[in-house]
Length: 179
Image 1 (cartoon, rainbow, N blue to C red):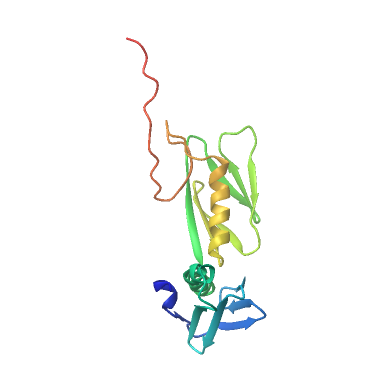
Image 2 (image 1 turned 180 degrees about the vertical axis):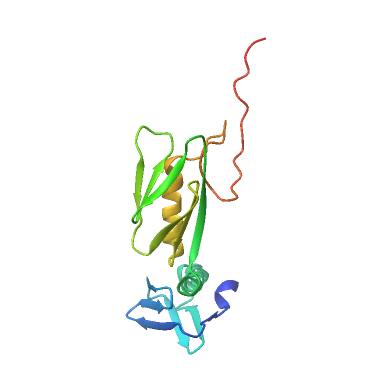
């Protein structure tokens, strides 16, 4: 049994939980999230707590036990508080701006790069070099932030590129010539 999976998840007031036909639905002030739960994992909702436990003893349900408990906890955090990831643009002339729900990046290419925000994700700009990706679904926020970072990952010689806030980029020495 998973140690983390044994813990129940507290459900704050104002959150509605429904579990029908293997689909767990959690709705709160920030939005609504759905998750498919396999038949080998049981989800029990008792007023103020959600408990997750495996249906049987084999290894696969036990391995998924703690994972699904963590996913349920992330869903509750998402609909109450939400998630965000900050990205920073480093480089001469690197900047960004918004056109409605489309993020436009000028990061050293001959053309601007456009990234459309999927449903449930929003972009916020602090100045023109800091991007904040916010949303309800932790997985989707991380995926969109990773897509933005992949447009121009930080390079190891000068450190130019798009990086997560607080990310350390290890620098390399340049070519050493003959003397």
